[in-house]
Amino acid sequence: MKNQIRKNIKKLRNNLNRKEILEKSLSCYNTFFNLNIYKESINIMSYMSIQNEIDTEMLNNKILNDNKSLILPAIVNGEIEAKICEKNKNLIKGLYNILEPDSNRYLGKIDIVLVPGLAFDKKGDRIGFGKGYYDRFLKNRNSIKIGIGYNFQLLEDYIDTNKNDISMDYLIIEDKIIKCGT
View: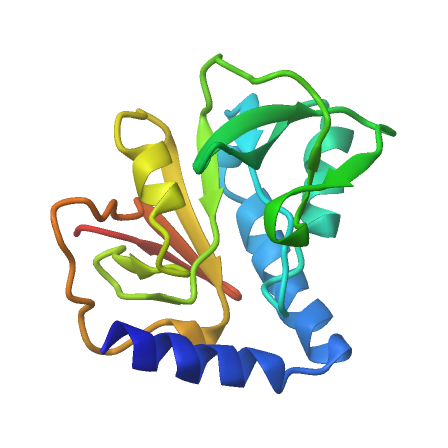
């Protein structure tokens, strides 16, 4: 079931043109930056988008321009490591050719973690790429977890989960904010 959902969502994402991606990304961007939890946060973990995901480049630049700490994931020995991203510092290609900071591991508090996903449900459960990186990373963190996606990534049905799956606290689905678990 999850593999079929992954396949369907990837197909829908791949059919988006650049203009659609930017318009929908801008909706997510505006929704996120209007949240009080963003305004009150200092250390924010985002990600570098791939494969027609919501484009996070503008979002990441705004976080830096707002003088907040931008933290990005890097895959090291099969696990996510949080790394500080500094303004005007080059990123390097990591595993899966995803850009990541060439910096030391960040061990401090992370207020918000923006989490990519292929699909989400209204309870905050998500389907990722199936490797469990984010579930393991988020397991013992007390950060606010926010999934970001397109309208077609929000499923009507609930996602089957197991004990290792970590739910989101909020979803930003284009111009909508969904508080999960309520």
